[in-house]
Amino acid sequence: MSLLIILLTARVFAELATRLKSPAVIGELFAGVLLGPSLLGWIEPTQAIKLMAGIGIILLLFEVGLGTDVKRLVRTGVASIIVAVSGFVLPLLLGFMLAYWVFELSLMVSLFIGGTLTATSIGITIRVLTDLKRQNSKEGQIVLGAAVLDDVLGVVLLALLYEFSIGGGVSVMNTGKVLVFITAFFVLAPVAAKLMSIVIKRFDTSSEIPGLIPTTIVSLVLFFAWLAHAFGAPELLGGFAAGLALSRRFFMPLGIALHGDEAFADRIELQMKPIVQLFTPIFFVMVGLSLNLREIDWGSAFIWWFSLSLLVVAVTGKILGAMLLKENNATRWMIGTAMVPRGEVGLIFAELGRQSDIYNNEIYAGMIIVIALTTLLPPFFIKWYYSAYRHEFK
Image (cartoon, rainbow, N blue to C red; front, side, top):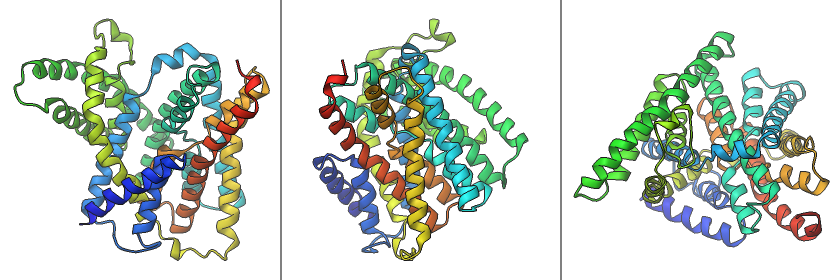
């Protein structure tokens, strides 16, 4: 009954959100807030729901990896790298300094806050640009290329923060170990995934029973998730690596020997979508269920100053990165704003902080507010800006 209510409520509010021209993830997040202790208190996050939410987050990162276009980053070149790296480093540093020196939070909490602010939701960005038919424009290509690199940097940072959280603190030795393991994992995993996909493809052509692709791909993703955990990284890194390796646009030094099959990659994406779309809303609802807004002292100045100042940092950090480009002001503002949405990627960081007991309820609530606002507001601004300054864009 709990699962029935979660799935239907998530779907209803996702539909409402999209009809209001907002990202579906906002509706799913609100569904969790509605069903959880913040409002109705109908559902508690049981172990079974947590398990399905965990599968959802791994499959979500698989989908992000599957949709990652590494060649796009190469094509857009230096501009995308400048936007991605500056838009990653500036929010990280500004968020950390604000939390550590202004709000006097601990080192680990401050690192997690800075890390959460580095995220960019490529899914929301692509959706808005596609709606406006600007995905193939110059600024659209720079944004999408930057979002690819931002995803990769974010996943690596997530792995480091995960190690710090389970290791009890920041350590140079642990950092070096995780970076070595992640490098080894990203070098070996794509090769293994490509080879396994060849085997899966061969069996798929001879199998007389439908459903071989989703069964074997989900098994492969879960195996990679387990492997990532064995390497000392979060399980979702395995999902990302598997998706990246099976992407129709992935290439690597051994790519000469392992040519991608675009038709097979399309079939993987098509047959995996229903499974991903079934499990990922459970994760977003779980985020809302984990939040108890009743326990927050809304009369306290802390929650308001904390959320507002982090919102300013979250927006400013991304826009300043775009201002480093040698483009006209309209293009730079558009690129910077398009990098602002945190969406599902920001929620993944926030949830890891909560699960690791790094965030208390008040800080977790503040981060969710910031992520929700940075996800909700930019699409409206982008649409207005293109309409108002249409003559500035070619």
